Image (cartoon, rainbow, N blue to C red; front, side):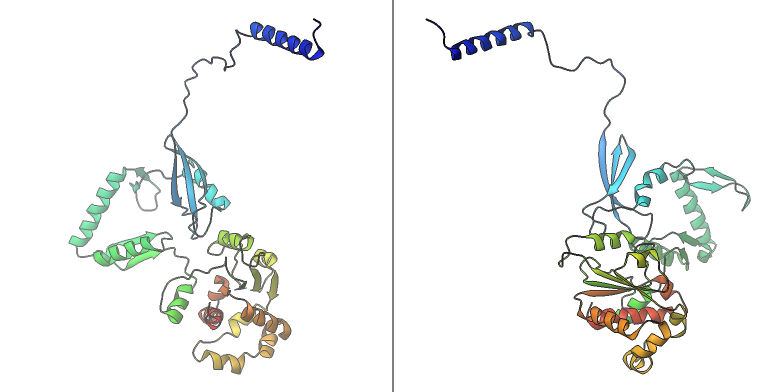
Length: 341
């Protein structure tokens, strides 16, 4: 019986498969044996913390291998930074392992100003501090203690304050970045704390000299707020910068309102009877003459701020640290009070 074309093809295919299996039966598809190089994978761990490089206090996640920090990244669960991190925060690894970084307590061994120091253990440092603190108390001179601290707003600041009160010393020197906002909150709301502005959900952000994208409290917060695609209007908050110069922040704003520099130092006055004061001395025409900003533009920004829900007005340290800066800050924050923000 003559085979059909289909049967012939099946027979040839089966024969080729059998020959192939027979010739490759000694082949094993595994990696080649490598000699022992003395290396083994490290033990990896992740630690969640807060960046202390600047006052923003962004959330970070640290990757640790065999007990050594190898990478810092943003924490996506942090309510403010939301996974973002600036170059300074990322460079924390280099800061930690810098060859000139102090890696242990130091005690002066020579004369003051001589620059002679020696390392001591943490336990030795605590013992030395306890001895000197006890000596001050026994001598009846608790005011001889002076505490010099960096920026430690929040719980750490309260700990230092309670310790100094208990010890009896008023000498607390800290780098607290005071720009007057805590005083404004105390005068207007009875809360002597720096406010937190909800830039993410604002429809309009009106900034008076606040360098949101440069050196404000948290430039990262500004980047996150104005770049977020989750805003209700689908395009993020509108940003208007009122400033005496065309700064980097002004360049990133949707609108820059340039004013004369001498206005803030010469024409801002007190907060008492604020409404009547404004009506008497700060009509739109008068402000236009002082600042050089057209009346139409002042009116347009004011109406836009009144319409936007919600809107927020922020004030920069350049304004509040100028002469009469406290009153300028009160005036700016009054905008938030007027619109209920």
